Image (cartoon, rainbow, N blue to C red):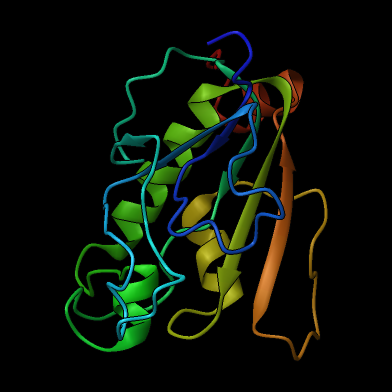
Length: 171
């Protein structure tokens, strides 16, 4: 696994990847579907390298230099509309806990001075609310005033800052 130092923790069908088989990346998701699972679109499939829930990953601490987290953004039913089938969905009652657990797991498997890229769309939940749930401040992204509903946030696991914000606990 030494050559696998990037983790996509919610890979879906890898739509934002230029190289969908990037050799240094482990792609995980809790779902797997063959081509045509969305409205018989033959170009869309969902096959992670490992079927795994990002809220409870089996990777050792500090395993990755870069982690990408693009969790579901919509509250809904998995078998509902085309969007929830494509991207997955959040449970209305548990979404805060699910996002927090997933983010914390991504943080756990991130090396010191590693980078976590978090993608979010405000379709169901606003940017401010998701950042409150995460409980960490991004280095940069869309800080305010953006009319674009999709946001990319960049976090870096700086040990001194991590220890201070976690009450002195070592990551």
